[in-house]
Length: 206
Image 1 (cartoon, rainbow, N blue to C red):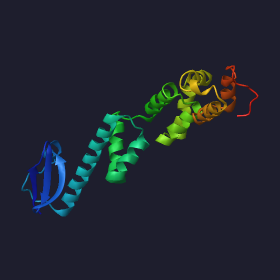
Image 2: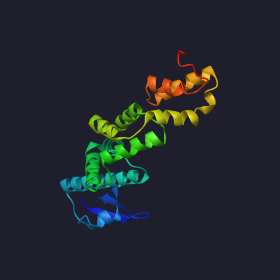
Image 3: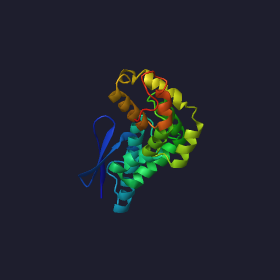
Image 4: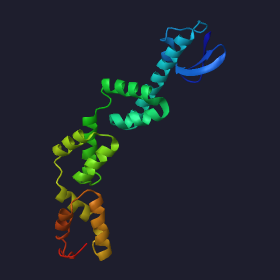
């Protein structure tokens, strides 16, 4: 079999075998592959080359994904496997970990702090979201234990900002109570915070 390379747009090289298009690679990879256009290649050599190209493409996709936002290991792997398969995805994730581009502990800490400070999540909701994103339970628990989040203060901030206009009616207070429960706050903490408002009867059955 004869391998030929033809320059494409930008930094792309199109690879053909016996005149039939097979793969596209970036120029840097092609010129470091050890092949030149017109070389003879057997089936086994082609399979090795195709595997290297698939892993290279997957790694580049991983870098592109990470350039948009941080990911944890499992989250990135699941995204990559949908288009590149398990083997290439695992290889790409291993490489970005070795380069320090992803770190589950760092990711969990940053996400937990963002959820608590910017979105007003309580500890239970933060833990649930970490696990949902792909963080293992042990790391999620360790992260929660390091947070200095005051849930009572968080509830008061939410009541004074996001939910302030809903506290004047019975229907509104019920909606606020339900919303705070969904954000991961405890029944007792919510009632305690609401009791500070004159319009709220602490004995009222929500």
